[in-house]
Image 1 (tube, rainbow, N blue to C red):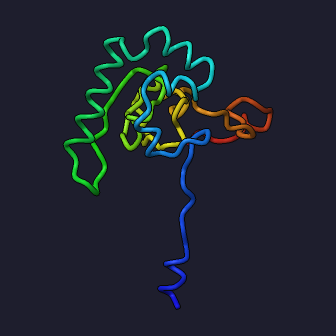
Image 2: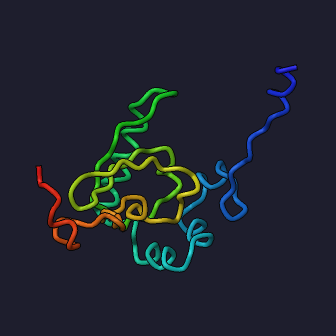
Length: 146
């Protein structure tokens, strides 16, 4: 009974704008430009992949993926390139994106293609409302410090 259920259960196949993952990895730069949004198309047409820091990042990511075993995760590759558009070759890599103080590790998945690395590394600490500080209210003056 359990074997039948396991056999029947199938996972949803990923597709990005009608193109599945295997086909997306084989796309040329021009074909990838056609399926991305306008801002990314403009960036690619102005030579995003030809710039030196981007080439170095791609090379390091490829090396990290090649050096790891078949079932373990690649090493973290640190970068300051928050404005790097995620391309299909980067899928499966782990990138340490600088957020101003420390590096936030981001595992790149297939549905992140076309987004920026900086979108996954928040640069500010979200506001925690409802916690008054010392001297914020008249009653907090009587709270002992220690």
